[in-house]
Length: 380
Image (tube, rainbow, N blue to C red):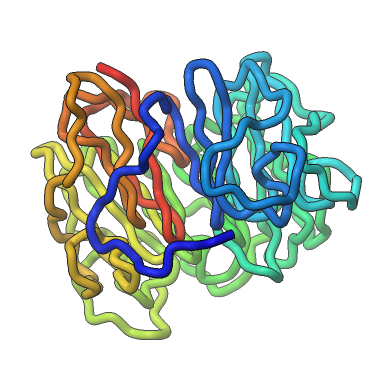
């Protein structure tokens, strides 16, 4: 598939997407929900577009037979959809879409053993040697995950054994929100935030893999979002904390960027008034109470949206969007590496993990992985 060769350091509008109510970005592809259809576009060698083929598509193509969808979670080697009846349907590379089959599926297949699901989290970063990590939050507040790789304990089941089908995360029966990254995952519980998986990424101060959940913070964060090797969390009051890799300034505390730098426990960033948060692969963005958009971290491809390629470990304001909707309340999606809707009264919900009690605000911004990032937009 022909791919853009020139990154955009400023937001550009995605043409033809005027009816999207939710969009999820994966690795080299994306999916969108509209009021009457579900479609995906981008790279499709692993069948992640779900259109019955393994052919790349430059434009949105309908997902075969997918109806009654509540949310779509794009990832790396598999895509999953949560239906309104609480069932989960996935498709993609063999061994990665929630069944025991090692045969690639280019169309949605129901994941057996998952019912009454409330929310999905899918790791949307990876490479040729990686596999998706998918977690589901159930109505009974338990969490189940599946992945064809568990070498860091990211399944949270107390072992390093992989599980192609959903397996319960040990000891969690009171979760209100979940997050899944490539090598670790987290859940907000009644007594704070708990994580499990790869050493240096979990956030409990250790450098050991955690095969079962460990408590990271007593704070009931309102929002969690993860990048490749880092996680950020937003307090209800607006303070943002980050942990994990800081080799691109992901922690947002203004410290000098070092190649081998990790925050082994949550470190407070310079952001104090965030109302929405989203992490990209090596960067983060927030929208504040004063309606500013702040981004920080890596900017190699212009993902911070400043118009220059300079990175920053300190949160900085982004310019206003170059695109504007012509009609009040019309959803508009602007994209580069980070995106926000046009400056209209557009209500948005986050694409990644969000706590169930998260309120709608307007406008908002979301960062995401690699060369694309998207927002869920709701007409006001």
